[in-house]
Image 1 (cartoon, helix red, strand yellow):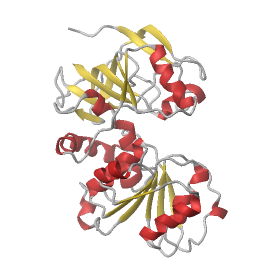
Image 2 (cartoon, helix red, strand yellow):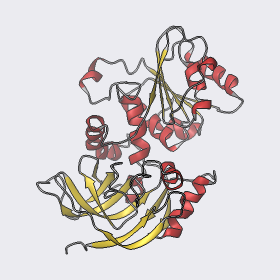
Image 3 (cartoon, rainbow, N blue to C red):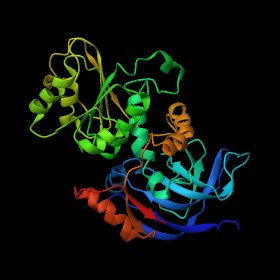
Image 4 (tube, rainbow, N blue to C red):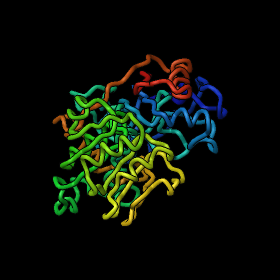
Length: 350
């Protein structure tokens, strides 16, 4: 049965205003290397609230559809596509192109076949949708050599000569969604010492962390905890949570005698007067977690994810669920982000 020509969708029609439900949004058509999905799950992330309320990524291209974590069932194949078949369940990490044909808060969306995978039978749609944005950001932050700290991805040629077991990484905010996946990716690569600041010790050690440090007590106290583990040898830091004011913790934890690399999710100017003793210097990388922008890294990763999930090398996150494509459901989640509430990873069942 052919898909309809129009559909329901939730739109940002004006920055700073609640999402609005429409019933006449055009159903997108798949092009080469794309398929059309009947959307089953749309997963939220904090940037969706910033998009609605501040125009992040979307201000110049209204009306806009939100959510970049999508699962769906293939209903139409683009020209020449043989990776999927009609009826396959597919995970899609959508792009930030400005057309919003891929985003999740609609009944039908297109998928770039490299930016996702066929969901294994043992994995639910909600589990799959917990991955995209929250795993690609640390993937880029840890393994990209231009916008991240540049540890080689474990499937690359460079990995053959890299001493993973002798490497230490500090993950600040290991208890966040991105931090949880950062720990798992570090373990996947075989990094020998994986230190998390923050999070549940039991949970994060289950993911592969070797040390989980209390994040409370102030920067100097936490820094001393870190130094007791790393001494003066730390080269690699991934900060999953801090704004620029808090990023001096990770920078000050870096070695003074070896050049350090610091990747962060939240960009902005650092007050370098608060970073002391770094005679060897350091590099700061601001991470943009887009599969399409980093396709040379992300697409080979997505090809491997079904096996990683099946083997338990990657464990999905727990999610909360709302039933139905309604403005009330979506705005409730976005309002909670806006109001600073603790928001679990939340999916809407379309």
